[in-house]
Length: 107
Image 1: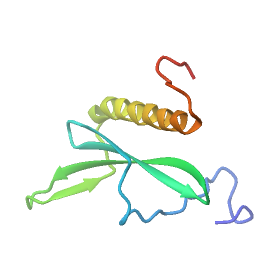
Image 2: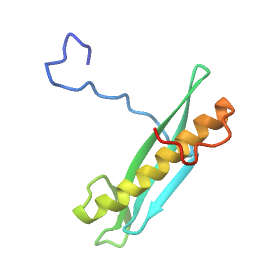
Image 3: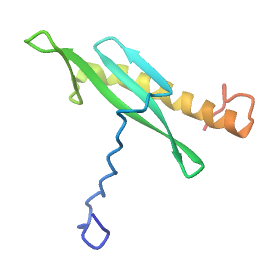
């Protein structure tokens, strides 16, 4: 969607990234099948990081499946995983800049 086609208050969709051949650089898991993965993206020499959230569950058929739907009791655990992922990304960015540690630094 281009800016001229976007309606006021409507967010532009992010491009879909094919991760089938890529592995996450970090994973954070919690009970209840919650997972936050951190992905490294090299965009023409500029390194950025992104993350994905998923929840796995066992279907009635016995197969494991993934969903993006969460229950209310998943949210606190997910927030902790997101904090760990954010800390990991900030540490990785600090290592790239040559900073010793982000431990205890308030942002």
